[in-house]
Image 1 (tube, rainbow, N blue to C red):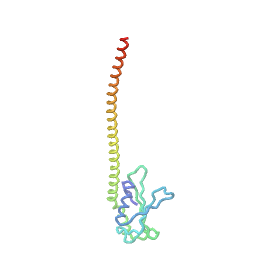
Image 2: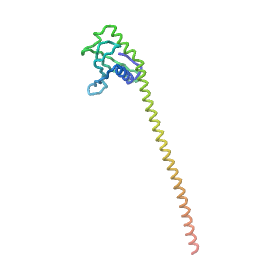
Image 3: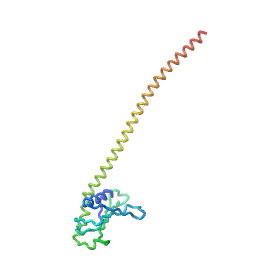
Image 4: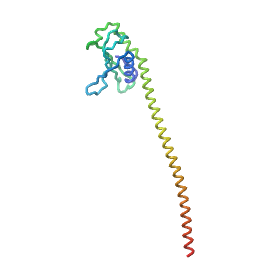
Length: 176
């Protein structure tokens, strides 16, 4: 078990990438009725930083608490032949396993940075989309203003023509 001051997503991405570099892909085990993300299982993995033997590594990463969204805990269970491998490991390999989990901080930092970059890219994309919408609104409003000005000029000319017609009618009334 290891606590990190990073989000659960960053820690999980870091362990998945670290194991992928070693050539192992996780299989995600779902919980009852798929209500939780479950465990990541790396079957028959040989992690030489821990032991030369092949073992199954079962990893669970979860947020430390609701209040601490940027703190998480990673649990690693090592099994060999459906039995707890910790009972069979010598003290040196146990300390190597603890070091492996403890030395993941740079990997977690890198994964956290990638998540921050993705989040910032989303923020920039949303801001650019909003700016495009505002510019489109400006073009639309400018067109409406131009149309309005044109309509005003046309209406002014029409009013002048109607006034001239009215004056003619007044002139006819005086003539009679």
